[in-house]
Length: 438
Image (tube, rainbow, N blue to C red; front, side):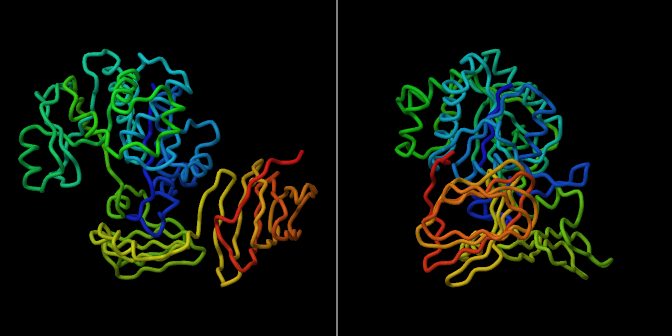
């Protein structure tokens, strides 16, 4: 089974855990059997591999998410990188071309496209295999998953099939309606459109070449910034005549707000937090190393991170975005391909950061033009390279780097250090990368 996971851009509806770099699918909030936590993308990736260990998974995403994807899924995951945001049709066209020209997938093979962040159980992935099998038959150019509605939602578009059979031709599509109109659609047998569909690889290759006029993946990638922003639904789905829908009646939740996310949480508190016995329907998600105490609250979400603190009625939490848009907040936490960093303190001419490197990983060999840096190793073992000079480092070691010198740190075990940046102009763009000199 070939699967394209659409990994969307930044999300502010789950602030303060999500931000311009860290999207909601990377928040580790679901408890595993061993007591650790996994994110939405880790959960979906694991579930796909459980359903089909040979599945070829490609994540279509922006370059800002590549480091986090490698951090959470490893270096072997396939990634189709969008140079910039151009909506779902260009993203799917690029990922399809990636499968054909880079991964060399047979154009006759079926491909399933789905969002990276639904909350689903194993039945969903069996349905994806059925969707791929139906697309492989060639009876239709597109086969959609239609989710049987559980209530008249205003958040989803609707698919109205020709019949109530498990696989049926599509009669029409309806845009997101009011709740009253949604009830009328459901009475007609309408299904939620969850943005999940399958096709033969060659179908979208041909459609993309017809609409964009390109030769191969590499040309499409180079021209990506010039492409028109348009959704796959508008560009392809709603114009396709040979189109079917398969019903899915299993669990399916879009965890796009704190309200829906807390519904899927298996425990009330993640991180340091205490609820007294008079609290009902309260959830705490705390990434800070300080305790949070809630008393006498009802249907409230409390979330704390280095980005800020949210205390909200769960229903009202759906309306968070315009308020968060008013904040001008520096990114305080990010996952990189080599590990992660957390900003501890910001002054006019200095910044202090806690850096964690995963075993066997390293930073890029780089320099800064306008700042000096100091590293203090607090745990783990590794080595540094400063202007070509290699040195083993252990807890307590201090490494100083003047502006302009080239440097990197390599972790042998998990390595934690405090980085102090000093300078008149501390800027994330002040970085030049180099090849290692050995």
